[in-house]
Amino acid sequence: LEGSCYTPSEEDFSQRRSFIRKKVDGNSINDHILFLDAEFTSQMADKSKAPISVTILNGYGKVIVDTFITPRHRILKIGDQTHGIQEKQLRNQMDEYEMLKKIRQMCRGKILIGHDLQMELNHLCIEKYSLLGIRDLAGTKTFRKFEIYPKSGGQFYKLKTLASVLLQKDIQQPGKHNSYEDVH
Image 1 (cartoon, helix red, strand yellow):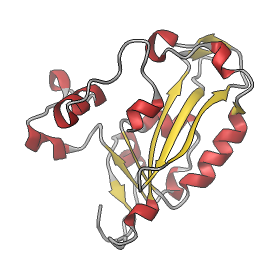
Image 2 (cartoon, rainbow, N blue to C red):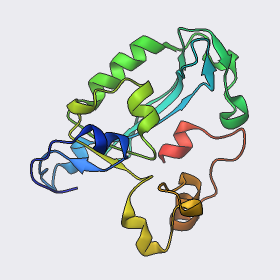
Image 3 (cartoon, rainbow, N blue to C red):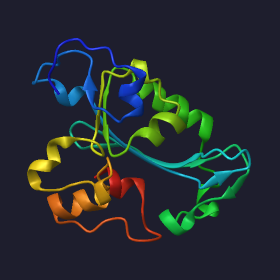
Image 4 (cartoon, rainbow, N blue to C red):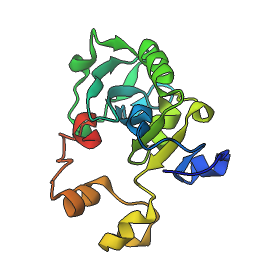
């Protein structure tokens, strides 16, 4: 992640490119890192997606956020067949807007690390240009040395494949996919 000053373009964000804006001292790099994953509804009444679960670890691996979120809009499809989260689990949890505000504040000046961060950047309303950097594991070419290639010649690595090959972990079982497991 070392580098000189760099100003990311909109294409960097849309193409899932990793970048860092300026050189960070190796002794303090962990102070600048956040690992992030979130789960979202399948569909809201306005056809958008809303965050329903978020997990954030700091650069030392300590959990600083792991919570369900109560969406403010009517949910048409929660998507529980994917993540197993039921609507009743979202009642009386942190308000969506309050959580989005908290996440935006936490991310300022940080390097976000995660897998396929597009959903998180867009639906958690993270101010992209306030970030110090991004390391999106979905698009990194680093994994090619492990002879891992994107499925079917696509551009992006599946997190389930990366975990299986690199960590020998079987993750993302149907109906049990969650942000805590994915961020670890």
